[in-house]
Length: 530
Image (cartoon, rainbow, N blue to C red; front, side, top):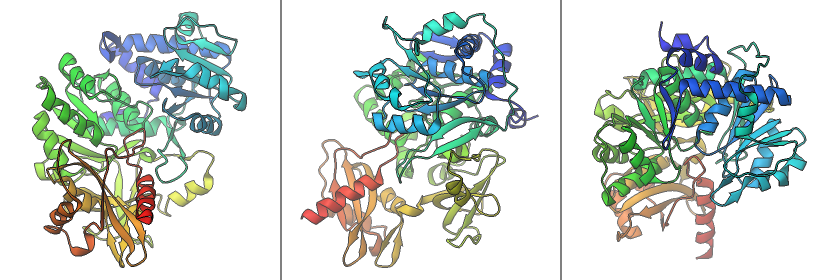
């Protein structure tokens, strides 16, 4: 029986129990010198679950995880699974209003949070918002400080001690029941809470592991956002199912990631495009021994073929681009490591086993092979729905049960998926459709360009003008005219940038996606003032 078929019958808790029974001493979560084996993670999750049950947390409740990449995230995740509760993974870098909104919307009864991160006091933050969160009964803090707590606030280590060896009533959990409520990044509006079942998560985790060839010998590095669906599924859960280990490190430090590869002999490197760009620059400053690596997986944002080539040259291993969606419990399509180089460079590979992809026009008519249209997906990873938003959920699916992704792409004759861009990102210039990804790919190939994002801005003559927001390579000298002439060599006149802006950085969400709406507003304001 394949891993994917076995995973269909498991819950997140039973998957950990099976691995902890088979390989208790095998390393699972590595954080600096601290190594948590599968047995230790299972034992500590059991203790935390018992302590939380004693406080009154029960099956069906939700526990928010507001943590950076730390072993406590995994412990709390599995403790919730053992209770039959659900998890709400949230970024610790959210603003107070964002955090309050999502805690209120999810109706979390308990939150596990870091005490302090980059000078921010999370105990103080939660004390300021808890009076406006009637469902939030308990706060569990992770840290080293010996602080005073009231009857609603507990230290993580104290709960582990209190729950050790203590019995609690476990729940009978249906694999089809909700487990994770993961919020979308909100780059195109208000974030939505995506409800994912145990089966959604484990089916995608298993199919991803099979496609990437993950095994017990693999050590995965680059999980900088465990609250994100990619860190949660291909990161923690794919590794769990195959018996490998995840290596956690400082989430914003390229040097730390490269050092972790070298120190722990990592074999698989995950990351968003910006991560790899930064690491390539870091390696020019100080090369590392990366000979243990066998694969780099780039996800979280569109990837140019030029960047994939740079990653393969710089890291000396195959690089693949993964098409990932929160609504599909992460990966939809990705190439296998041994796929032909042209497939790895120019496509995101075929859909995962069990996942169907089809392309439709604006009227919902299915298009033939090689036609550009909206990508629809159907399969075991597709979400249960948007939490408390039945109207949005209904609109998101067509009559055949395919989720409308809003992404534009095509499927070629070999079954490989090509991404073109977001339907909402298409620029209509003088009546012609301009896909930003095509223009970005050309500009990224310029030797003086580090990153670029192309957006549309209102124009009285053209309707929309094509604006290229360029981050040049440090020290490079390049002009807007040179960028346009570079594009003219391969792009039609209608696709050439009308405006070129030079920036120090591109605004991004916590998960590395470019905030295109913010770029467009800034470009429009700048254009209006000139």
